[in-house]
Amino acid sequence: MPENLKLVADLALILTSAGVVTVIFKLLKQPLVLGYLVAGFLVGPHLHIFPTVTDVADVEVWSEIGIIFMMFGLGLEFSFKKLMSVGSKAFITAFLGIIGMIGVGALLGLVMGWGTMESIFLGGMLAMSSTAIIIKAFDDLNVKGQSFVDLTMVVLIIQDIVAVVMMVLISTVAASKNSMPGREMLLSIVKLVFFLVLWFVVGIYLIPTLLRKFKKYINDENLLIISIGLCFGMVIIANSVGFSSALGAFVIGSILAETDESLRIEHLTESIKNLFSAIFFVSVGMMIDPQVLVQYWKLILALVLITLIVKALVSTLSAVVAGANLEDSVKTGFTLSQIGEFAFIIASVAVAQHVMPSYIYPVIIASSVITTFTTPYWIKLATPAYGFLERKLSPKAKSRLDEYALFSSSGEGKRNWSSIIKSNIVSILIYSILTLAILLIITEFLIPFIKEIPYVDNIPEWLFNTICAAGSLLIVSPFLFGIVRNSPKVHELYKTLMEENKANTLVVIVWTLVRFLIVFYFVFSVLVTFFKFTKWVIVLIAVAVILFLVLSRHSLKRLASMEDQFKYNFGDGETN
Image (tube, rainbow, N blue to C red; front, side):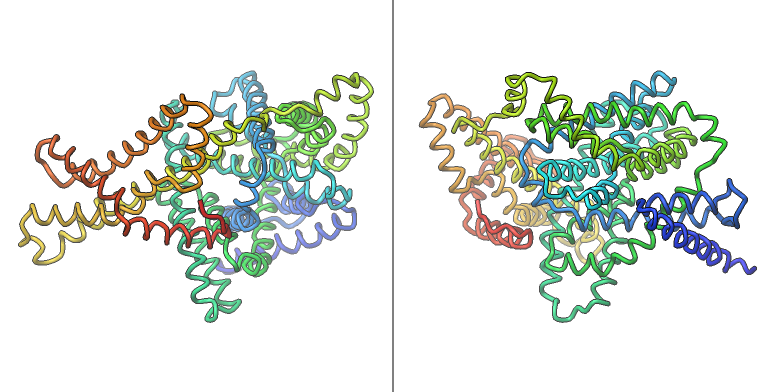
């Protein structure tokens, strides 16, 4: 067979076997994901009963594209507005559950003699539940109207986000060639937050606006090409700054999810996502080695028992601590007790980066398959488990558990401070990141490019630097203004707080000074970059520029215009 047709032959074998096996699994009312895994096992290099794939390396490239489309599809289904609209209950449930399972997995890894980071990543894989399997189980069991379902779904979204962060950390560990010190981990997380906020804010500001402006010129074919082009483009950008392809695909998917065309894009790309997702899961099944499973059956059994029993207990207690009633907590805990497909992706990245031993891949897959089969039965078991606890607990103890809330909503002062933190902290973070990003682009790319232009050398240095400094400050002035600006809503909250307690006046003043210091830092940094005279002169100039920015109506108008455009694109009509 010609070399260029070997990949076609492999794809034909993969897709044909996947089609046949998934039809059988459909008849057996089992998840299609399991059918793909079984199909991969049957045509993989470790089993020679059926025809096998000839070039595993090429299939792995296609499976990488499968991960990209899976993450892109997940981003399209992701809603920042829904995530922000839920209370703290789901966030606390998710993070306590993740931390708990990371601790359990880390303990197991250390017992087996693994390194610290390997053990932590094992715990992270155990913490991941399967969104696809749980949604399928909810449909089959007809429980979507029950109160615990919404809590479970938001927990799954947060788990997916944590999985993306874990993949970033795995890449960082691999790059460092050793266990990551705390400082490097912190820097990686800060870098991740910086780029996520930058990409999201810029993407929400630009992409929906452009799609809306050219809507009458875009048909289904154009939109499909544009969407996939943006997906691959963001993958390249993410890789260029040291992040994984999966992160880039997820980010652009979540940005497109906030556009008017999100449902249309999701519909157009669904078939492509399903095709490449099937290739990915079949390639995962190809990695299952029966000899490895036999050799590590004790580890597989331990992971299954930990997932079914310990994870159910940890997730239940997390929901109770977060303030969910006992019934919802038990049902949520039992529902989350499986190892999800995200664990496959984490395992594949960790093995490829040589962060974890190669045998963990088939071990995780085998454990996941077993816990996937048990998911519907475990969800059903939650009801009698809750009945057992209800009988064992006294009515007074059960009442206290059901009425318990981690964060009380009482106290007007607490609500006011919560609103101030929500409005100020988020805006300060966004405007600071935008300012830093723009200044980096100006100093690292724009200024060197301008200096290469003919005749620029003829301009006196002091004049050139003055123009650059003034232009830089003018460009970022709306964002600097946004850092120190208080909306009318926040002004009223400040007034209420100071009337409630005079001591709050000092806190308000300190908080205001902190924001002015942030602006001063940016202005000072720009001036130090372009001028070399004494520092006290720079300080005076910086103060003068800050005053100018605070009093500038033009900056306010530019900021208000950008905020209105962003909120319109984000689907939020509220103005602070």
